[in-house]
Length: 234
Ligand SMILES: [Zn+2]
Image 1 (cartoon, protein in one colour):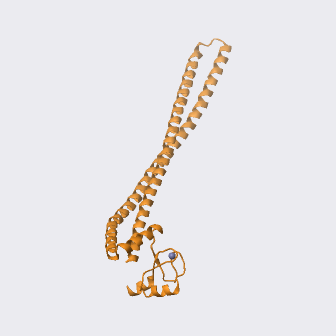
Image 2 (tube, helix red, strand yellow):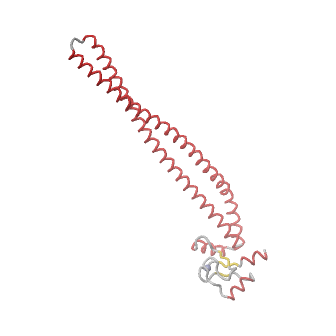
Image 3 (cartoon, protein in one colour):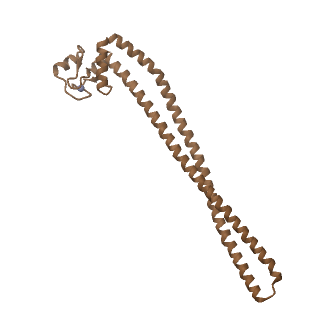
């Protein structure tokens, strides 16, 4: 009965650990997603900036083209070689300016499109990651839910064992369990306490093997039980 009590407590402890592990996983997932989210919005801001820059460049190209058209209309009113040379210089400068700005605009637009493609890809990845995380959380949660439902059965069985063992024995078990990391029962099969490894005196070991009496480890105070004997005699 003490061994069964220990096994029930082990189950409850595993359940608590699994709950804590799921909570930790959820927190970690949330952190990962918010990091992802922060990167995405950072990049969205950069894209917006590049878009504005593209607009600026486009306006500059339009203005330069406007200037070029305007200069051309003055060609018909030219009356001297000096004026013609000056106008040609102006036209050349305008063409050059358009060419340089168009090149810049092209480069910026490519950059922008690349960033937008990458952003779209990362958004899809983020969504997929979230689905995957929620799926794992839901599966673990459902599993845990089922185990929690079993916890009341465990508590019920513990109450039965308490009634059968008697208050004094149960209290001592609980005291040792609390003081010894939740483990109040140790296997004595190897002639030593399986938990703290202290050798069991031969006389005590003989009694344990006969399953005659209830013994405690002289070092850690845990209940010693000859597990092999339990298996053999049921
Ligand atoms: Zn011990």
